[in-house]
Image (cartoon, rainbow, N blue to C red; front, side):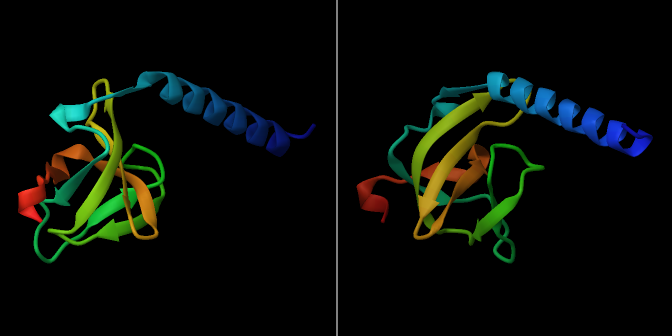
Amino acid sequence: MNKAQEKVLVATLCGLVLTAAAAFAVQPAMAAGYPVDNLARVSGVAHWDQLNVRKWPASYSQQVGAFAPGVHVWVERCIEVKNSSDWCLVDRNNTKGWVNSRFLTPVHDWDI
């Protein structure tokens, strides 16, 4: 095994360890009081901006889509991440992924 292969192997192992640690740190819960299986509205985003939807509940995760301010989304579940933000798994049409819960406002039937 040459030096380049060793570096790749070490980097891969480090990545696996970090991924495993992150999986154990994330525990399902009701984040910031948002009930699961409920509608929510994208809020707190500038009218000219969009809310990024992520593949995993982390700001550095791959972006899989975006929602405009005011859009209604279905909140499937939320998690509380210690020493970080709360994240919710949301779905709208063909876009499904994780968003920071601070950008969601629960919607009641009369708000639609």
